[in-house]
Length: 299
Ligand code: HMG
Ligand code: MG
Image 1: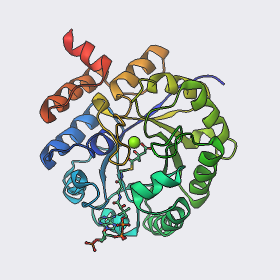
Image 2: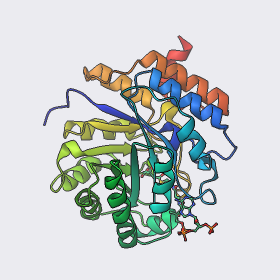
Image 3: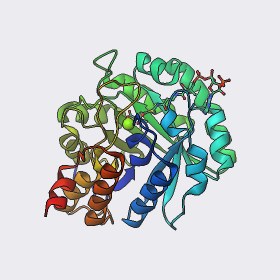
Image 4: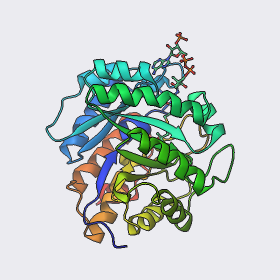
């Protein structure tokens, strides 16, 4: 299979990138981040998460973020909604797209959303029904597709089973999360091969964290298989509250640089993106994990 001609980036920095930050980040900073990302040509931004503030305090201002953002034509602003309560809140704020998130690991599912994998799928069904009634598209996530912090190895067949359930339930796209970033390229390819037996390749996305520095290599491997949607986070921000030690998503700047080099179109302005990475890491006092961002800033 050849590389895709175009790749769509899903910027998860405002959600996945910030959800684990221990110090409060102001709503104004989040809104400015979202505005700058849109201005750099990003066409899909995961802006907030309608989860319990007791579980993830950093996302407690989801309503203010969702209603405060200044929409740019052609940009989708999405939110995570783990249950009907989350969805109702998101709908009240005028969200146009949401995501449910499940896992290929029982232990991670319990820690992350307080229920088994089967219970989570049963919980998502009414979310999809209600969202469809409201004309809101639903994306599905599967976490721990290349390893689990509690269970270790995860069988590709288990990933395929959960991904298929989400797709058949009506998720228009399923994003495959290497939550703890332990995957390597061959393993990533095998996982994609297993999942794409049941789901068309153009309905799949790669959501790779970079804990072990493998995310770009893994992306290269799965794009060779035909994956054309990539989740990433500006400056490589992030970590998962329920996956100790997991570092951020692959940096958006690094992905865009790689894609530019491969002649794959994204429509994103790399210099503007790198400047956002410098700004947000300075603002929240975090290291910039994008090698490309750091190199461009030093020029
Ligand atoms: P629960 O405690 O089992 O829920 O949590 P419950 O239904 O028993 O309700 C308990 C309390 O939570 C009640 O409040 C509810 O109202 C409230 P109380 O009566 O005690 O005051 N509640 C809510 N509040 C706000 N929004 C809601 C909501 N639902 C219930 N939607 C729940 C279940 C799923 C809510 C909880 O476990 C939770 O919020 N978990 C958050 C997990 C999370 O956000 N994890 C990070 C995102 S996933 C991720 O990062 C991975 C990903 O990036 C992909 C990858 O990398 O692999 C997507
Ligand atoms: Mg993630």
